[in-house]
Amino acid sequence: MAFSLSLPRLREPSVLPGFWPALGFTVSYLSLIVLIPLAALIARPWEHGGAEFLHTVTDPRVLASLRLSFGAAFLASAINLVMGLITAWALVRYDFPGRRLLDAAVDVPFALPTAVAGIALATLYAPNGWIGSLFAPLGVKIAYTPLGVLIALVAVGLPFIVRSVQPVLQDLDAEVEEAARTLGARRWQTIRQVILPAVAPALVTGFSLAFARAVGEYGSVIFIAGNMPMKSEIAPLLIIIELSQFNYAGAASVGLAMLILSFIALLAINIGQLLFLRRGKR
Amino acid sequence: MTDKKLNLNRRTLIAAAAGGAASLAAPAILRGQAQAAEPVTLLNVSYDPTRELYKAINIAFAKTWKGRTGQDVTINQSHGGSGAQARSVIDGLQADVVTLALAYDIDSIADRGLIAPNWPSRLPDKSTPYTSTIVFLVKKGNPLHIRDWADLIKPGVQVITPNPKTSGGARWNLLAAYAWALRQPGGNANSAKAYIGNLYKHVPVLDSGARGSTTTFAERGIGDVLLAWENEAYLSLAEFPGKFDIITPSISVLAEPPVAVVDKVVDKRGTRAVAEAYLNFLYTPQAQDIIAENHYRPRNAQSLAKYGAGFPKLPLADIDADFGGWRKAQATFFADGGLFDQIYKPG
Image (cartoon, rainbow over all chains, first blue to last red; front, side):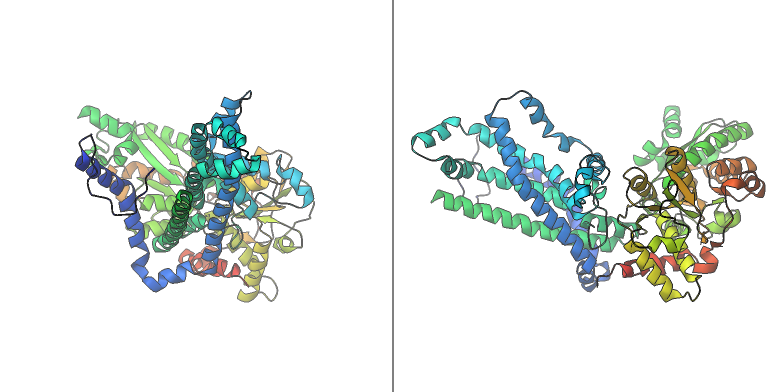
């Protein structure tokens, strides 16, 4: 893959005609689906002035909820980075009975309404649930604490990592690993210097997707979080709370703050990826 | 055209969503009594725990209306958190009538011009055909000896109540607790606020609606006391026989869930006559009996006497007399920076 940092020419040569219709379609489609709703969100918080916006987003409770939403999303994606890679590896490299079934099960969180996932998790991890009752005697509470938020975000984020990494692993011939072995690489060296660089871009993509999804996740979290202000209240819930008070500007303020933070986080991830690729090419 | 009209009547919601309702509804004004035989639909947008109540009411009303006018009426129900339901109506949900948890939510709709501002005086009893109150649901045998509001803040007691920002029932819960604290010896605004702050320290989970809290308490086994609508508490007793007891505190609040016709919608759809008849029906002895059977407190004295055993008498704080009306209560307790926000201020 060639990466060019110079400005792209407006019209890339292609054997297929239709650059302008394709561009026109893309722009109008994106406008309808993404750009216009986002513009509306950005326009909304200012009806009571910039000071009010700042006042809203620096409220300790809003800050606590942003910290929880972004912190838990980052942590959950990091956990999924490791567990998802292992899962993808197992599904690609080994053949075992039930592999296809497991493979299909990875997608279940995509298909399930998030509320259903949330209720199922809350039932399992509540102090009287199957898993929760194992931890309760140890004094560990999972459901209705920030730990519950983390569990829900791990659950919704897993398929993003697995599905991003899987095709790359599939393309990576086992022979490459064998070649590394015959050239004298130790197991750890093979993983670190042969496999990881190859799957790194896919891992970053999966991480970004899982992170973005987890930051905005509402349905599955709300049933297991406990929703206590300053403790287990996620930012999307604060938006709903503002809306239920008919405070549209306040809701949009929290929304805009999330948008800005997400943008910064995703930008940082992408810059990190770019630097990593450059280093790899040296 | 005939086809289109039939379509409108049967599937009004879809037609309305498609935006075609306005043009197609024009002939509806002429309909009235003359074309009474044509079936009509109403949409009743209500709050969370009224599902069972309105299911029963709707059957009875359809029968009565058919007998009186010969017209078939189908009433569709929509349920959810009271505030969220009000917002849906404001945002364009074509509700013919709203039957919500508290007057403030209907006021909010009225503020946007969808309902005439004098709506509370259009029907008897401030447009609240039934009342309810807030009681405690505890585990069978009441192992922690919860008797009154004072017991809720004893060490180790956990209380389940939804978030008053999103749940109408939760607002009544908080007001009931506040009213009790205010009426204690030496009680004043400061001591009542301190009690509320203390009470919410005993709340481990804030669900967004009354049903969510009932689930958390009854099915997940979280907490020792559920603050619940009286009718919701009775439903839980029926749902989980032998697991829970209802405790009536020394003081509670007179919860008045009001009803109103949405003027803008019924005038557009030509359903005013049937919508008003529907709400008036709620005050008839027949409907009042159904209301009592569903554990709401009927306004009608005979119905109340008939089902009196389920409705213990207790002093009830009044939203207008004790709290200066819903608008004031909303601003004092639940708006941004109100009492509920203050008790969660860190430090």
